[in-house]
Image (cartoon, rainbow, N blue to C red; front, side, top):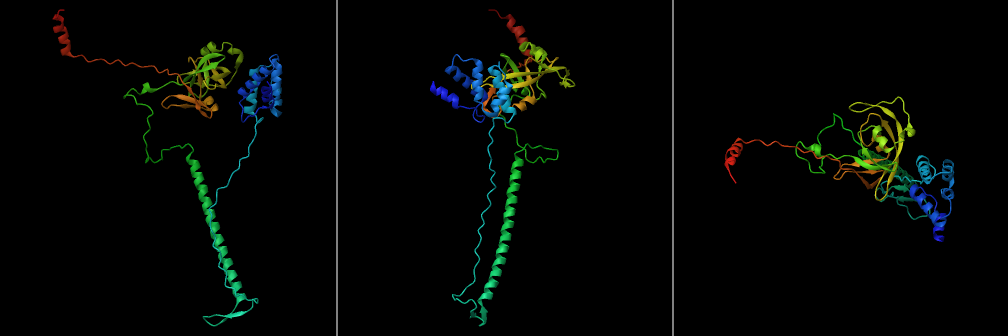
Length: 370
């Protein structure tokens, strides 16, 4: 009991580590285990204090008792996703690219005699002329300074050229990873055939290889079908199908004005927008999301249509490789399956009649007796 109480008291909400649903449910379970007779209001108040800081104030001002646990969870998720409350920012160190190491040659110093007097003159062994060491030293220093300045200029030029080359390579590498668009002026020199992930059907039977993108979701504690339609511009649902899933949709409808929708066959009549919560079931962890559907009066589909707008909002990626599936968000390991509604199309082939076989059947076999 003491261990459970210590875990409850020392475990505050951390956005980088915790998920709102699991964190809230764990807190509620520990409180119910410690104090079975405590009311639901006190449970919510104790959990609210473990949010801490601005997040506690925002959640407390939004959820006013009496309030259910689902409303607390939804409000906490909404505050965390739409605001900056509860987030901890980390500093990112941007390191400059390493500059190449260039070794500098040490300048050669002139010969100096080991005499205390610097004005001593010495004779040149070749011409026999007298030389002053002080003048030679000044001349040699000028030469070394000029050589060092020229070397430093060359080194600076080399460094500038290398840095520009690195910058050009980085820009080219970044641009190569962006989506590329071809035009009519693009040269068709490099052409590669597409890779087949499945066995190609016979000629003229390619339409039999398609699979649907319909999946099962939970809406209002009922099982429903949703079609992940990447070609649909907006998310919509027919009035007839919505009546079977959400009978009281009229009280939840948001009116719209001045909007026109049309399909490839006819114009659609929008009635309004309804906000529904979809739960995508999965054995490891279910995913929940709020979706706004445009209710269409003359739509005859028997499923929800999740268009390109909410597919991009929720990061739903549909994979058409060997086994068709889809993922949500950054977690590409959690895969959701689709229903295989492919209808087998039977093709009846007419056999050509052979006149000799028909003559044999009608003539010879008719005379036979058993």
